[in-house]
Amino acid sequence: MARSLKSRVVERIIKKRGTKEQIADPEKFKDYLRQKQLDNSKRYVMPEEIRKEYGFVEQHRNGMDCYVLTRNKGRIRQKQILYLHGGGYFNQPLHEHWRFLYQLAGQMDVTITVPIYPKAPHHRYTEAFNRVLPLYLEMRSRTAAQDMVVMGDSAGGGFSLALAQLLLQENLPQPGNIILLSPWLDLSMNSPLIPKLEPKDPMLAAYGMREMGRIWAGREDVSHFLLSPLRGPLQGLGRISVFVGTREILLADARALKKRADRLQVPINYFEYDKMNHVFPVYPIPEAKQALRQIAALIQNS
Image (tube, rainbow, N blue to C red):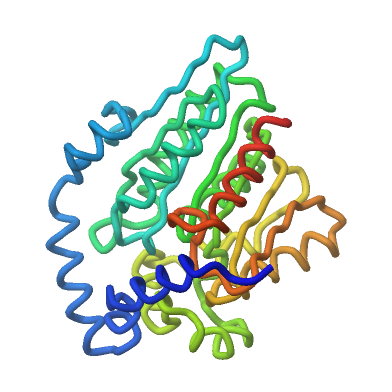
């Protein structure tokens, strides 16, 4: 299928935002880091226009602000989605995240919970897990396995898979579905595919991501599975589904996960979209609509 015109326009908009330039150059990355220190010293508050348009309700749970969206058409079974947003562990949710989740909620009876988990550079990965794990367990305690979904994009995708692996390690109940959008699964960024993919990616750069991963890890080696879940256990987890584009450097991680799952004979739903960018399902493009339908079907058919 030919790439849509809208997706080409969105790619140009992504380039103009200049994120890649900020994180690709060591000197510019220092400025980026200083800005994030300022930004993340303040509490995130969802813009009022987004709250009114999409209907999210703010709650305070387990020491975190959470934004919750419920769509209930009266069915007995209610799906529960714990959504861990992306942003390199440094950035708060974007408007695109909220619009995507609103559209997903329109497909089914569901409650979507989005925690504003602790971010770098002020916080480390252990703090985020300590906040999110009890939230998951509270949600899972009142939800059947087939109705519980852990889902995330980019860094949040890696966080989602690592959370499921932590549950396995601790002998705690799994979600029925683990849905990963362009997941960041290996913080080392050492895949030999990355130098070939980076010129095509309008958003991400290996240098900055490697530095962000190092800061997020703190004193821990980035190879630890809670940081790089590509290296963690895959057998015994909930059903894994991956969505990824070919014009992004994290295609390397997605393909590596698929290869490892196949080798271990672990079933995986793998959707690789030609010529799509990083986390393409959140953008207003035809390809995203198709992915949204596939995601909704995966959840509803559990």
